[in-house]
Length: 386
Ligand SMILES: NC(=O)c1ccc[n+]([C@@H]2O[C@H](COP(=O)([O-])OP(=O)(O)OC[C@H]3O[C@@H](n4cnc5c(N)ncnc54)[C@H](OP(=O)(O)O)[C@@H]3O)[C@@H](O)[C@H]2O)c1
Image 1 (cartoon, helix red, strand yellow):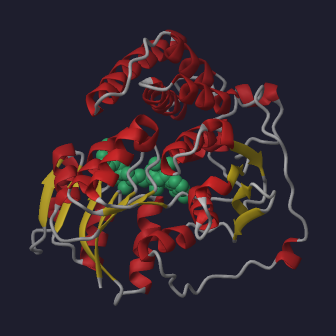
Image 2: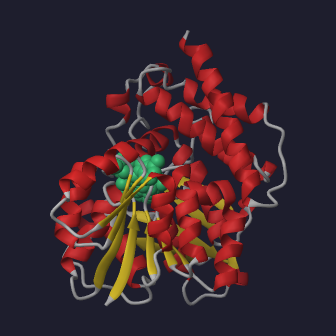
Image 3: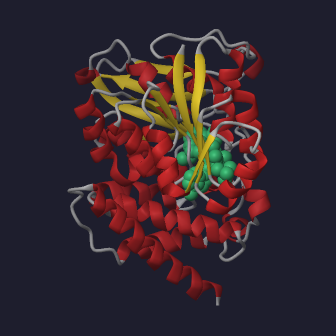
């Protein structure tokens, strides 16, 4: 029986993870859960999975949860420090990192620092401080197991092969909800339309990142640090069907890929049970049914965010943290109706252009760049909203 803490249990990855726990009650036991502000859903999860410790980032939501759970013995913490405390709880061997955005950085690091292996969905911390997270994990002998379907595919395609034989990795991208839309229509697309992803049901932030292709920019940076591979060896290929989850090309031009129907429970369960596989009662991929698979090069003019991702990686130091923070602010502003879709990339670019890059010597450098970029991006949002 593997004990787990699940950071971000009420989200899309969080609920898919609990679906796996539900299917395999003899394999996993939930010790800790955390959420942001959805106390109603967290209460349901507490009653179902009986963790001993939970936390909510929003103190008002934590107070409501305490009220709801008066009849239970669960300990309820609040605020970002409470979330990090759940990540630090002694005992569990595995933390599933499924918080969205930079808010997951300190809890994920807390889990690593207390010797837990991490199943990582929350890509933003790797973007902000991938090198530091890698070093922390190495120093403590813990694994960072990818949950992102593309990175899980790369991880699986690398297993059993010599790293020096890798020529490049190719991350596939669905192209997102707006791939077929004309550039003019894209500029003014409404959030409801941009949230309609053709293949994946995910949280709002990553769905907008998928629409701008920033999700792929973030994934390139995540791959850089997860697999210790330079950006020059990471390519992106648009594959609308999301069947091939990513590929590795070797020196002899052999390509190894991982395929499957788009269902996050497959990569989540792989990270949870690694190196074994669970028997998942899910529909099988039938390639004859699918018939054909299509591929396109990414269109950097229509989707400038992907290029910004590569640019930030080339600049290095605090630039990826700056990109990430500006993106979080711009996406939130778009979702709230404050800016147009086309302005997301402009805000990120302008924030990066005014950033004085520093080396990433310690975590504080990344956190400081994050704070600075949020302020800068917010001032740009305010100016555009006028
Ligand atoms: N969804 C996918 O299929 C998918 C695939 C690959 C990678 N990912 C990555 O996985 C991460 C989670 O994505 P998601 O789609 O599951 O997001 P989501 O549905 O929006 O869920 C986010 C989770 O984080 C919690 N949260 C939000 N703000 C928080 C804060 N300030 N402090 C602590 N917790 C907070 C939320 O709690 P509340 O519900 O209470 O707000 C929720 O539990 C993202 O980094 C995403 O890029 C997701």
